[in-house]
Amino acid sequence: MRTMRMQILVCGLGGQGVLFATEMISRAAAAEGFGVIGSETHGMAQRGGAVVSHLKIGEYLSPLVRGGRADLILALQREEAFRWLPFVARDGAIVVNCAELRPGQRECLATMDGVRLFEMDADAAAAACGNVRAANVALVAFACGLGLLPFERRRMEELLRELSRPRFLEGNLAALAAGYDAAAERASRNRNERRR
Image (cartoon, rainbow, N blue to C red; front, side, top):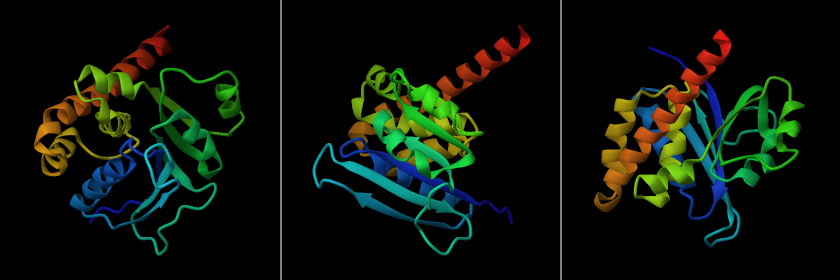
């Protein structure tokens, strides 16, 4: 049996689909036969309040991710990525939904030894797919396509068919494809830059 140990934070604001993204990852891990535990923390109990999910895949006893231990932070909102920055592990990764970082943010990340940053304008990708609420799906797919989450596209498509409401299914599937495509495009760009 395959083993896996991974600690993840999914963060954003109320209404961005933090819990749906967490459920996608949890169900994919469970379908692969991995143990999954987690916990959600809600800020303001309304749209726009901070929301974070702690998720552990593998053999763990406690559901909460401690500071400096997150292998991956999946941030649906740029400022939330930086709020949870102290939780990322030294060799961890941050995947953030943004068109661009604010001045000083990239420099802040550069001071963190070994932390990798991946940006995707998931909001724009979701809007282009006809479902503005599917940025969460696009960002999860982007992380999968980058190899930061070990789930194949076919598995995630199957999960979306189970989890999505019928009226959101096509938009969610399109957003999933956009996320994987964005990851492939980034990988291709990186290969071309290394050849120069």
